[in-house]
Length: 509
Image: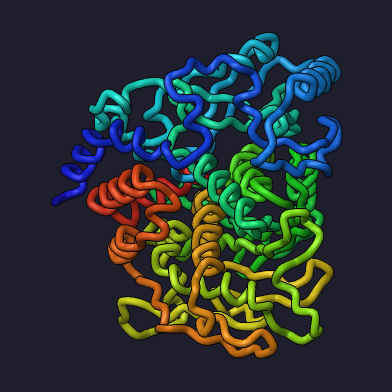
């Protein structure tokens, strides 16, 4: 069966699948109701003041009460007046982690908070190829309908890099009030809710690489983009300083930034935050770096000249639900994981093949798995170790953050919400495993695996692994898995590597 047939079959059944999947989540209370309540959008809030971006700790288990909503709106109106805002972007992530937005005049904001902003559903779900008339490929009624962008007002921020404009990150709903089951942000929030129900919370941060190029130049009929300076210096500092300062004012706190290993390659490390905030920060970076780069006549890309994608690492640790104790930290003071940490790691190792499909979702992304190997292999082993940056799962026990696991399966082009969701789903499966031998004794640094984990080098094989992984299928949702696989099969059939590189420079900037 080719991917076009697969996609058509998916479309015919998608409406029925979406109805079935909502039975196991609390948000099905919105079914068949018009989205009119202003608090529907605010499924995650902290007690922070809108003017203080340092306290942006959003909790998916909380919903704004009317007094809180009124207070939050008061701060927003004050920010609008102070900054003389003219426009507000309603942003939502598509399946690739790229921002799709609608911009409204600022004086309509309060009305749109209540009723949402409509957008064609295909903008978030179809294959991103503007030259291929993408909308004509979607025929099913459900994909030709509108969806509603409902803003989470705790994410409202004035954009330093856009003139008199603010943005707010949105959750997506159908016009009947049901959450869009292919929404990466909804899937991530659902997994965080499952984690909280198990008595844990997640502290995490993304470490993202990207490349900066000069504007394209034409040499001998060829278009060439020269990389920016290899190392940070006074010439590059203004660009990075404006980017980092701008990210801070949008609530994305950067812990450090540096030049990386290749010409023009930069690395940004975000400050760890609880809940969905880490994925929101990475999502903000993808748009922010593009817009700031344009101001300096640069082009930013998550794709580099050698054909490899930049890395996107998810550093994370498991905490108790009160967020007071790191559940990975051993009390003995030795370099080791607790039994909870070992079981979490066991889940990551067990599902690494399927995880890689979501964390490295393109042909080019997967090249980095075998970049140090000259052998023609179909897969590479999943590696882990303590304080070993060469390992796919690197356990770091030093520093003020305490013990944490770096999931280095990821590419910077991956959707951060899907990386977060899949990591939590795999880790939860490890925690719920009844096989105590898998994790090894608590006082030992040894780790016992039932079988060797392998990561497919081909995207086609990774798609098979994802389809066969019943745990991730259930956790992420049948509707999402079927559509994601269909989309990737279509891309594999219709894109050459050269075209993919061009897409990354134009689309995944």
